[in-house]
Amino acid sequence: MKKSQIRPDYPERSDDPLHEVNMEVNGELITRNVSPRILLADFIRHHLGLTGTHVGCEHGVCGCCTVIIDGRAARSCLTFAVQADGSKIRTVESLAQDDGSLHPLQEAFKESHALQCGFCTPGFLMSIVSQLEETEGEIDLSEDGIRVMLSGNLCRCTGYQNIVKAVQSAAKRMYKTN
Amino acid sequence: MKPPIFEYFRPKSIEEAVSVRADHDYSAILAGGQSLIPTMNFRIANPTAIIDISRIDSLAEYRIDDSQIVIGAMVRQRDIELSDSVYKVHPLIRETLEHVAHVPIRCRGTVAGSLAHADAAAELPALLLVSNGCVVAHSASGARIIDANELFQFHMTTSLADNEIITEVRIPVMHDDAGWAFLEFTRRHGDYAVAGVAVILRFSEDGICEESSIASCGIGSRAVRLPEAEAVLLGKKLDSNIINEASQAGKEYVSAADDTHATTEFRQHVLSTILSRAINIAKSRARYGSE
Ligand SMILES: Cc1cc2nc3c(=O)[nH]c(=O)nc-3n(C[C@H](O)[C@H](O)[C@H](O)COP(=O)(O)OP(=O)(O)OC[C@H]3O[C@@H](n4cnc5c(N)ncnc54)[C@H](O)[C@@H]3O)c2cc1C
Ligand code: FES
Ligand code: FES
Image (cartoon, rainbow over all chains, first blue to last red; front, side, top):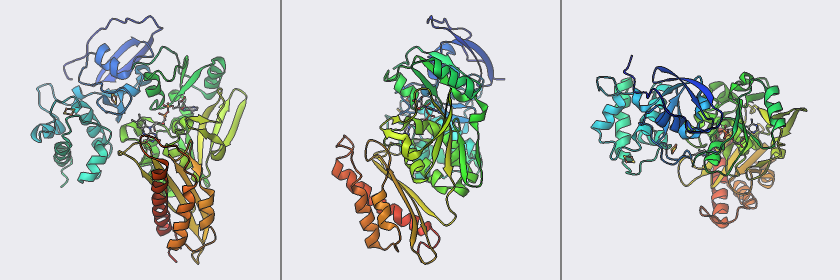
């Protein structure tokens, strides 16, 4: 089991009625009481202290806040924490091992220089990981295909060319395709 | 950019959901949340009660019977997109869904939610129209069927009553011989359409067009059928003159005023261009289309 990065407690400041939520986050079971208006992105960042998930636009456009809910990519800014009650969530913190060894996609990002400021990167990683896993690598890995895959994520540093390269090399490593 | 305070309900049955809806003046159904939550984050929508229908098991399924695809209100767009069994009986659905937003949005967004939201530029209302589909709506006083051509009233406005919930979307299967196409023009991949067209055509053995169904989104205050363009094709062999005539007839339906994305004239041009392309593709995919 991985070392926990989850914050044990967070003071609830709102006085609206709270709802209990239970989730598995990065393999760890958690129970918290939250106001229904708390977005999953804020729940992950503030209540759980997992600040790898970033918030850019809060209306679904930028993709920075993408996490994996029950095996599928999702905008955590367009999901209430209460909706994710009973779900399995994976955030960017789940990718690397405890000893610091990187996920093959992270490795490929590093090698291809696919991040600059890095603000968008957690969203890209989670969106790509889920799409590769969902299709077991049976996805169009031509440049055009990868650009469709990435179309839900914006990078203000605009290093898309290197991100495309990274996805190609990661997919090769993960699925031994050509 | 944070949503306002609301009361949260998570019913386990349709009956429970409609009764919560009946008890609250300003309730909103929460399906995938991909349109509702952004509008709440912007404080455009301020519902006092949110009814999360994701735990109503009966809404999470889709099935295909002899004549139609029945899609429960919680079925995600991505599930239908990836379904080979749906593709087999109605290939236009996958082709249309690939134009709706991006994968992570489609993983959460529902088919019914998009229809209920009824954005004038959304693709799925055009799909429902072109397929002669309908939705089933439940309220405390029972269920009724609303045909596609009655459902969409205006941008983000449907004929659903405040106390109703869409429980099912029904889309008739496509005829084996039919050809189909969905095309759209957008500024960026995954955006709402500046103009989009959905076409279904069927031909008799001697190449005469005997079914012609055309719908469009993005060109006015709601998705519409283009009956005058349909009529040009019906009963004829489709040569380039006829196809051109139909695509010109389609222009008449562009009613959107100039906006930041396009002028009316540009939209008309885009519509007629993609319409003639879509007719050609549908024809080439149809059995007997090239006879
Ligand atoms: C960045 C971004 C890009 C997008 N691009 C596109 C695009 O290109 N094309 C497109 O078509 N859409 C697009 N969308 C919208 C997306 O397809 C939504 O998923 C869809 O419009 C709504 O489905 P939902 O299940 O998320 O509904 P929700 O957001 O849960 O609900 C939407 C509305 O419908 C009502 N509603 C939902 N379900 C029911 C029901 N069963 N009965 C009665 N009322 C109901 C809700 O109360 C709400 O008013 C985009 C969204 C985002 C965030
Ligand atoms: S913060 Fe969620 S998509 Fe931009
Ligand atoms: S690396 Fe800077 S926003 Fe993408």
